[in-house]
Length: 299
Image (cartoon, rainbow, N blue to C red; front, side, top):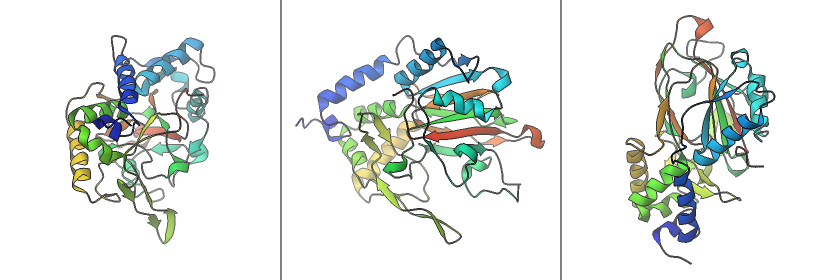
């Protein structure tokens, strides 16, 4: 087996990694764009719309879209769009509603619908991937985040393709890649609320390859409810990841979704800035989020 630094990470050998890396970087070439794909009818997307969506996801693991205004507030329209991209197996959580659709809005002043989870506040969310705390049989491979109403100010999302982050990590600290691929790199304690176990404890790697050799990442900058392996190299690797996320990276971007716009992605690394909401309940910041077990367009 190849004993080069790259081979000690998620990839089985250096040749596999270099081939994958070349293809990945080509995806960020001259045709790379942040322009949202306009969707006329999310219940029946056109072939050209489908091709643009899937091509961008294949290049960088995410794509921005914009719906025709008449569909901008319809959760059914969002679900229909996702199904046409091969996303059918939704993954719920304690806060998600019908069809596992989570309504992300500030609930701190709503005593009847209060949530103890940070996404349902106006506070910032640090860098993370969705569902990093879920076991293999509930792995979040993709999600959609759709803006129904933007905040009065703030609430931007910063995004970075987790595969680009892996490449930067391998180039800067190849000797630490193996630490992030250990089966016990991170441990998530069980989630207990009012004496009820909502989720069992789980441990796993940061980086791994799935059954189709797609790179998967579990990560969060949260300091609570996560236990990192007590190993100096693991600590150094996490510090390196955090330093990379705070600096410039190819493909890293910050966006403010407008009404009717959204992000479709293969669970990339993302964060949310703090925001100020309107005092009017009718225009409170509201995003729909749906998580899926499938990757986008891979069927």
